[in-house]
Structures are given as C-alpha cells and as structure tokens.
Length: 109
Image (cartoon, rainbow, N blue to C red):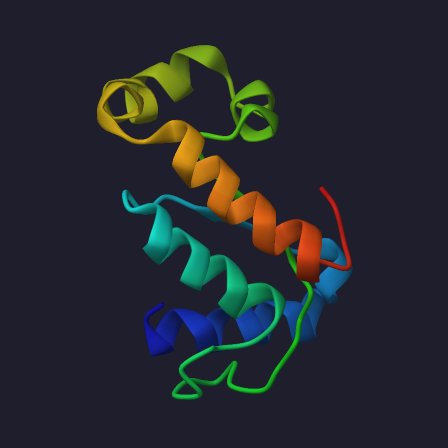
C-alpha cells in the first residue's frame, strides 16, 4: 500500500476514530489485497510506512464482497465495477480480505 495512502488512512482514523472508518479495497490481486488489508488492520507488514507497528484494527472490505455490493446502488456498482467483476478472482479477493478482517479488525461496518 502506497505510503501516502497509509498516512491519509492514519490521519482519518485519528481524526474520526477507527470505529468510524471503513476501508474499501479495489486491487485486482488477492495477495496484494491481503497485504493492504493486513496493513490497515494489524500494521504495515513491511515496516516501511506510517502504519508500521500501528494496529488500527479498521473494518476492511474489498469492493467485490457481497456486503459492499449490497450497500452500493446497483446501477453505480454495475457501471464502476461490473465489467471488472467478471474477470477478477472474486472469491479469492473476498477470502483474502476476510481472513485479515476476521483476524485483526476490531470494528465491523
């Protein structure tokens, strides 16, 4: 996860409280989504960014997860995600993000 994004997420969690921040990921690779999910829940596993050693425990979901899809206007979801959903490993992405959410998230959306 980009260091600037890590910084912004930390600022938002500090400003609004981690219980009020939900991170929605959109990466195409399950492994990359897992690393991003771990970063916003348990801290940067590479110990390189602003979230190194910082366990925010944020609620984190991937855009293709059923919980997110159900919360978005169907027309908007179809326009913005629909085509990509057909070529992504939806189950792999959801499984990877859910693993970190269940292990480290202190909050749920």
